[in-house]
Image (tube, rainbow, N blue to C red; front, top):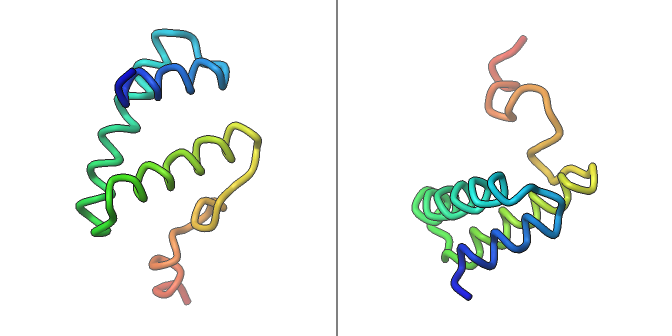
Length: 79
C-alpha cells in the first residue's frame, strides 16, 4: 500500500466517503510537500503535523494556530 492509498484508507476510517477520501488524500500530499519546502521540515514531520490537525479537527479540537480569528501577524498591526 503506497502513501496515497494509506491516506485514503485513513480518511475513510474517519468517515469520509470514498471520492472525498481520495480528494482529501491528494490535498494532504500536496500540502505536505508545500510545508516541507516552506518550513524546511522533513516530509515526515510535515505529514505528522497535517495528520494531527486532521484528527484533532475530526474530534472537534484545535491545535495552536488554528483557534480562529486573525492570524498572529495581523494582530500586531491592530491598534
